[in-house]
Amino acid sequence: METVAEPAAPPRQGARTVPIAAALTALGVVYGDIGTSALYGFKQAADAAGTISPEAVMGIVSVILWALILIVSFKYAILIMRADNRGEGGIVALLALLDVRNAPRGSWRASLMIVGLVGAALLYGDGVITPAISVLSAIEGLKLDAPRLAPAVVPLSAAILVGLFLVQSKGTAFIGHIFGPIMLLWFLVIAVLGLRGIIGAPNILGALSPHHALMYLTQSPPPIGFAVLGAAFLTLTGAEAMYADMGHFGPFPIRLGWFGVVFPALVLNYLGQGGLLLSHPQAIKNPFYLLAPGWAHYPMVAFATIATVIASQSIISGAYSLTQQAIQLGFLPRMRVLHTASQEKGQIYMPMVNWLLAAGTLGAVVMFGSSDALGGAYGITVSMLMAVTTVLAALVALQWGYNPLLVAIVNGSLLSVELVFVAANATKLLAGGWFPLLMAGVVAFLMLTWRTGYALLEEQRSRMRQREHEFTDWVVESRPIRLPGAAAIFTAATSGIPLALTHHLRHNRVLHERMLLVSTTTTDAPRVEAAERVALVPVGSGITRVNLYFGFMEQPDIMAGLKLACRDPALEKIDPAQITFYSRRFMVVPTGKVRGMAIWRKRVFAAMHLNANLPAAYYGVPVSQVVEVGLEVEI
Image (cartoon, rainbow, N blue to C red):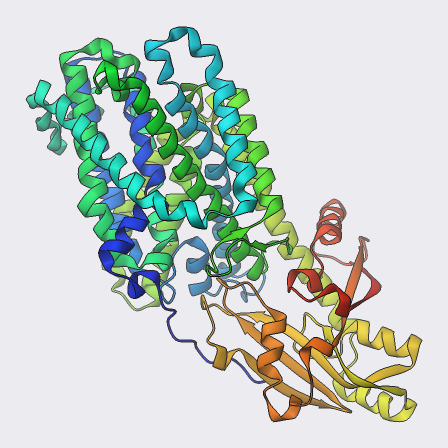
């Protein structure tokens, strides 16, 4: 079979636009989550410390600042963003680089795939909690000047989130253009507020020294030290977006946004919140909002709400993108994907993902009821994801030939720090950490069940498929009626005859003059160039195999692929708009005959397969051109 060549690196937004303009856009897409962590991160850490002494305040601020330096600035901005897959980043890109999809069962790469899938599932746990805690923390600012409004915080937060999820189907292309300027203004405002706090207590600048963090953590009782670390970790949430969104902007604009705007603004704000507590310990009830003068509290609540909605939008869009990549790589069943902007390929909407996220987020808001309570649920999935990313990035570095000792020292040191954060967040397991872990566990279970079940299904189908020469001999011998025109039939395999075609010929005794066996292959590259999209393999008796290649960041477009294929002289007389498509619908029948998965998991897989989007619908084939063929397969 003809194979696709390695595609060239895809053009990135950062390469097409002025870096400063791309960095401005990235402020809204990449840094919304970590930028709004200032609303609740420091407060959670200060609450965890119990006694608000000057030493505790200096120590907590120092812990936060050096966590930002080590984990975000060094690990993500400088180190991990080097591990790109032709410009794309994120945990799925790492899995593609390590080629875990083709790993034989029982191998270390197969185990690595499980680790990677768990890491991807953790992102969904993060996606459920982030909008809930962000919007709640913004609305809670109302309680400062109007305590009587406290009962309205949860309903208001829920209403805002419902509105956010409702508008997803409309697309966010227009709003996306103003995200960057709004977040730039947000970072400027929180930097100025931080300066007010620093001016009131200049000695807080001493927290820039790491010795305050070390002294506080070593001298505090272990339970308090771990609680502070777990709470302080909330200031790092959203850092993984720098790597995941790298393909949209390029590394330079993302780094420019971080070191030029976000990092300085966060440093000033956390120093300012610490300075405010040094001069006014009673400000512990909400140090972020109390940095602002009284007249600005309500405007700041409104501004913070807008910023948290932007942060939530970025998380939701990221969940769509991650799901699409997981489907492409065979980790999830096909789901309905809608493109909300014709000029922006990345603007997609996935109804099932949207409403599952909505249910989880609203459930978290109602169940926990405050940002303080949600703080117990937040952080554990993100810290585990960061640790998984460090491990996978180390393996990629070794695969690329970096010095093993250097990789062990650098990545091992980072992993040690992150495992401390994992342990610290694990102390919050009973306080709410179980909730995102439960979400992530369900997603990981479904991913692994789909992956294993589909392998068993394909194994059974491969046994039932006729060999190509057997089928062509049968066509010659049986001499079926040959209908004028062309027909295409979807097949998951790149060899053998699809069961639906054999079934069709056996029962109907007819065959189109030209038959196309259409299969799609997802490469380990993010995108495939048009010139490398199609590979044609003649089978005989008017049958041609059409292999279409797509990157894991692309939405497969069968009709566009066939238009390219029909430019080939072998298919030049075929009009894709006149092709009849035969789409198979397999009814999976769980049995105990096939080993490899428990019968109850086979039933789960069968249910997932039954509800998966049919190939024709997923690939965008017009309904008027589709004929459905039903088959049963036992696994």
